[in-house]
Amino acid sequence: MSGQPSQANSPTVATASTVACTNTKFTDSQNSDEKYLTAEIAKMQFPVGTCLFMVNAGDTPDKPGKTYVTVHLDVAASTSPDDLRPVATDIAHLLKKTEIGLRTSVVDINNWGAAKPKYQTLLTDENFQEHPWNGASTKAAEMAIWKIVDPE
Image 1 (cartoon, rainbow, N blue to C red):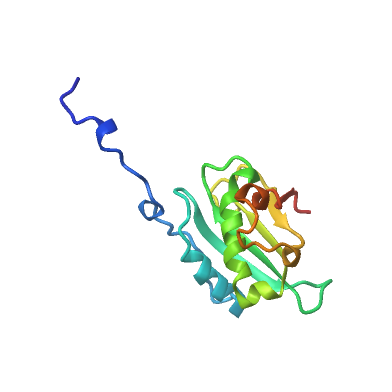
Image 2: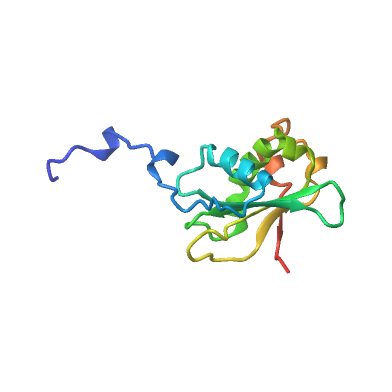
């Protein structure tokens, strides 16, 4: 033994505040929906190692009056979109409570903000309006709503 205090007796709990998320993109080119959602999502308590990178939102061409939302995360340790399911579900809960959520038809969550993304696939809810995203179902059931897709 080195005489140092045992780590087992004083566990260190990592929190999201211990990870600096300095890579979030707030740009002048953001529309009002993107600015609002970026600010709201940035307030969330993300898991350690998960950072918001950027939010895109815009009109859905094939659904007049409806919006799409794409949330780009930076999760360096993620090896597949399945790793994003818990945080994607939390983002869907937040989005559903907003005015923008009332007109959102599609939500995509990806890891394209990572310095070296390990995959290009993403999570999508192509029927956002049909899902309550309010915690009424189990977390596992809500996480199962997300589909993994390969963008074309």
